[in-house]
Image (cartoon, rainbow, N blue to C red):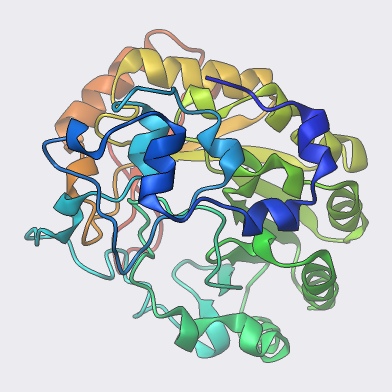
Length: 336
């Protein structure tokens, strides 16, 4: 594993790094010194959900290792085309929860805004890989989307999601935050993002200052699944946020993925490394059963056994809550 230097990251704008992502499966295999014939289930070169992965994240993968856990999360495979009973295109009921202008409301007091369909990385297990972004994105008319949030009774938290909200420019995101802060009754702003993990250069001083200057309490939720994703470069990026706003909450949510992190040693190491970055483990999700991702599924019984093992080794505050999201429920469902 190679950790890119912070100097290298700062020398190129995050927008340029985003645009320079690897989008060809053959190039990815070449960069890692791998042969497509290594796998019985070969890589998929053409997909409706194509490869996209920043070069920074590629540099964290182990060259020559076809079983690298970071590679497994992004490499399209032919098995994604196999229909699997119980795995569908809208596994968590997003469409039923949709309101006007890209607003989703599933839980009391919280509204989620689909800010964009763009993301820096295409994770193969993404529960929104089939989501109709062209029809639902709030950014087509985000002022009306925020007006809709203000009309939802008792809503005190706005969640920015996507895609990934941090793919928006600082100017666009700043406009959105300013408008959100003007909604009476809102107290918290929650941002769900994978960009700090796969493209830490996105956490600029300008972004950190923008979040700190907003009146809303910021809850910043990153998405790391494996300890190899947690680097000194990421720590420096998160430190910018902490320095700008000492009151910011930094949380992590992970997905339990077969052949990626479904063993106790990996999950313990993930929590310990998050603690060293001063990020609180928040949720460990069972896989959302989205079409194309069945090969990542870990059954609930095995998940419970893993949780028992990590509870025996970690203090309680470093044990994430094992949960499942189910369509129509009023909150995440704990998996005891």
